Amino acid sequence: MQWTEEHESIRETVAKFVDNEINPYVDQWEEDGIFPAKEVFKKLGNLGMLGITKPIEFGGLGLDYSYGIVFAEEMGRIHCGGVSTGIGVQTDMATPALAKFGSDELRNEFLVPAITGDAVFSIAVSEPQAGSDVAGIQTNAVKDGDDYIINGSKMWITNSTQADFFCTLLNTSEGQRHKNKSLVIIPSATPGVSVDKPLKKLGLHSSDTAQIFFDNARVPQRNRIGEEGMGFIYQMKQFQEERLFAAAASLKGMENSIQTTIEYTRERETFGKPILKNQVVQFRLAELQTEIEALRALVYDAVEGYIHGKDVLTKASMAKLKSGRLVREVSDSCLQYWGGMGFMWETGITRAYRDSRLGSIGGGSDEVMLGIISKQMGMLD
Image (cartoon, rainbow, N blue to C red; front, side, top):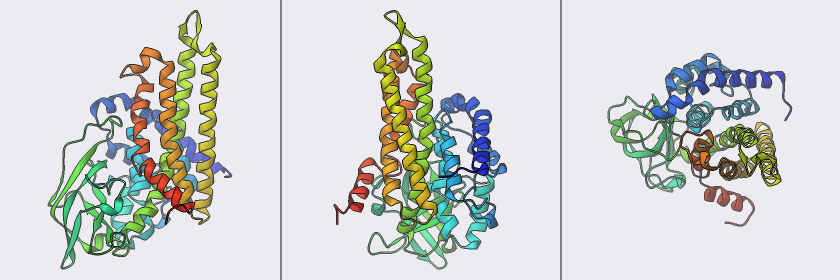
């Protein structure tokens, strides 16, 4: 891709914001188990960074996804995975379908405050018995006049305890499970909607994640995004941006792990010399950096195709698969060179190790990505 001055301007704006408004507070937010999404999102909204790829008429910048991927990559500067994940939900996971397929009325009501940072969004798809198997969800919406009556629950929902709105995948009719679903915006203040206490997770401690319950929650049918029965298709399209965001956001975090490991092993000595003086350490870190650059090239290539209207399902799935595995490999390999300090809870490389594990699960597991790639290769019917 060809980077313009506008790309670099966005990169510099986001980098400065991360360095000044996020990283100084990350340790406290991790300890608190939550970051102040409303405050952070409002600041990002004031900078225009929550609507980079969204339509101008609803407050966005109207730029193509190459500009969004610059934003995503700079999210990797954040010294924890929880905050970047929460921001990514707002920009690339809960609002793309709304921006593309929502009515003007719906976009004015919900997309505008998402872009300005006046509302926090969650994407509510996964359920206790249906994670990567999206078609297996059981939460139902039954028509009653002009409304839907919704019953069921959603699990592992990011931003949920602070969310104003949930972009929710529901079964809105009987029949074939890929054709009976709709995406519906559900305000968190709706009677019958409740959010459980935050879940205790292996990593991403600053990300508030909880289970949501719907008990005869009544929502207007006009809150449906696009056509009824198209929810599965819309969500699959939405997943493409989520997976590209996840891959791009992993890059600078991995590079930070390598750089901090170089600095640490340059100072830490064993048997009379710095650990970094061992060729095996040098070669391993060089190999990992090479893998990161290869992933970056794949991400950029997928984005190039995406902005030109090509089907990038295979490449986006490959990027998601590779990033989920590589981020674990990098954090594990680097942690080894920290020795005992790498096993201490407060060490940055330890946090990276904990946070990295979700990469191969969230947004579609490795196995789901491999299934998609296999099918695209003609190995599956």
